[in-house]
Image 1 (cartoon, rainbow, N blue to C red):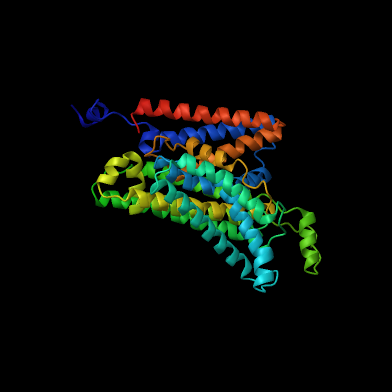
Image 2: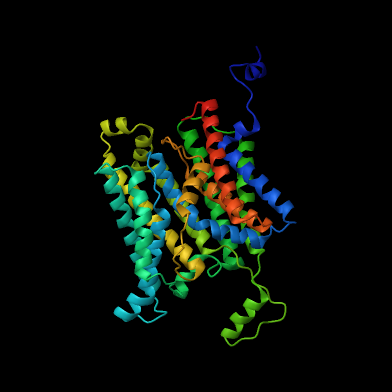
Length: 432
């Protein structure tokens, strides 16, 4: 048998293009579904869905849910659930709103616009969210109360704690620096967006190169160079294309005129300015990178997935599963606080209905993103893509003119369908 015949024999089956690139089929399926969804809505709306303006709005609307979805992956992987995230977001939002509008100016004498106000406010919100999350984890881990019951109670408790803190009032306006975390009030502009995009591209390509180098060093098989090049091209196109689309959304002339007049200047004829990448999106990317590293490169991540795969075996192997539960819920609480910053900053105030039904959106994003409800498997990037799919579905239906009740019906049906597809996929592939 010749060398070429050996490569085509059953012992060496010919790999497809996707297999050669070593791409995740589940992730590819989600990206394909997302692409079909976007193209479909763009056709139905007469080309209004895939405009730079709508894509910009989609990104800033997705951030809050996506941040919490990254934490929900860890919660579900360990075979728990958290129904209180929307209510906890509301409480953290109320705490931060009162901190920056009442407590710091009136009690501590920090005047409105003081440079410390936004940072002290965010620190207080993070502390409150982490403590409440740790309390939930203690009830679940050490008192062995089911997470469903603990967080269902939390949903009712914290939603109304937030209401009592503000006496049911809308609190605002918020600090201008604080509002920069909300999206349209805080963007990088075209120049800095390209710089950040190129830095992100350099980091991604460096990661690919280091991964190949480490595989060669340890004797593992590597992809052919053409496959590495194709993957690098796909990543480059995605990053630079995303930046280009956001830079194509220009600040309205009326807003530019107001900004120039506020500085005592006159808007030059023909002057334009792009929004660029929102600061909230950069925050999401940073959190996604940290959470991915936490999942793949740390002992905590290994313990989380080991516990989700087999809790009894994990405990017998020496993992303190009770303390681990506290840590996971504390992390979830901190992420809820960060989401509260983004959500309230985008609205420029705290309102009583902030975060309503976010618990369902967050769980749906994690599940649609491939997180197994049986525990043991889930990805951070999958949860973020799931959140983007959910937001795109709702935004697209709103643009088409679908009534809100029907929107919820469709979202619920999609969630059930996503779980069914995931179950069938796992049965076929033998995955967990």
